[in-house]
Image: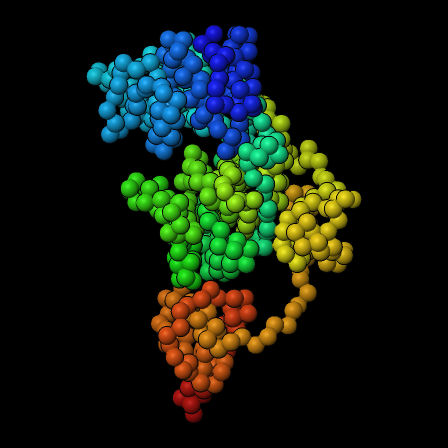
Length: 511
């Protein structure tokens, strides 16, 4: 058909994927879904198909929902030597080109205007095809009833876990994450789960947690402080991306990192594009170590340098989980693996990233409770008591693969039971007395987060040590559990004092 057999500069699995698509075309299918993991080169596959179609004098379109994805494809086509037009705001059109790279928003806004040169298309490639259920993509498909449609995605499921069989006729699967790791095209993952949020009582709306309630539950000083503390402990200054529940949450996380002397930035979908691009460039250039975001970097963004992902956004969506993890799987010089710091319990909700199921158009990740197959405890993920590494015990691997610690039954800290995390309390550990400067910095951090003046922190310091701090030129530091416990004790004590004063005044007035 319009796909030629000459395919240079492609990896073996990419060539095989295009061959499978060609066979589906020959079998008479018109709507195909290509599933390929994040980092496997879907844009390269698409560009190769567009180049070959152009050589066969076919009209084609590549359609994406974000500006970054449109420009990414345009750049790749230039590398392939393919002349093309770009249909997007603030871009000069080239209506005579046989290949058009198109923003779905721009196409939807212009398609009914009299001065719009609607492009012809024998082949339409839809990027991030799990979004093709939207009205805008459905309208585009209806505009071209005779065209062959190829959807590209790493996660062929909707947010509610349902498949895409109502849109596509055939599914073609590329190499798996595990296969690409074994071939050296992706790096392996190392997962630690030092904290698990309490998600009880949060409703599920449209297949995922209620965003407002989730934000309230996750955007608190204790949990945000844990993110910084555990990043220092485990990440060892790896370039990092943080996924948060909201814009407010993301900004808060970035601010706490900066307050602790760790250069950090924030991006969101509402900020100007210039500023967003500046922050992304800062991360690539090493000017910041941490980039926090809310639902901006889950799709179509690549920075191979990133070797750590912090998941601070719990999700029921298996697709979103894979998209977040996939941001850091690309190889980079001296990058041996990628570290996933899971503060959201996602690894217990969805499993390890390498254990992707066999994709089907009719699949559903959401199963009834009665249909669930509960794995034996020994086959379920465990969190190491000592280093918090998540692993699956086996006959060959009884202990932690990271630190070799072998837990006893009493020392098993975390296990899965019918899909829910059960936490076994840790034995109490007596910690040494805290340094005075360290204590004041932590109280100062708490004070500023609550909107108190710095004098309040000095009073708390005096209550503990019997004198005011000798210097106030101490930077704030994330409040630890021990200091939080003391502050709670201090607040209770002060409340009792105020109540006693009221009672004494009342008694004196009665007399």
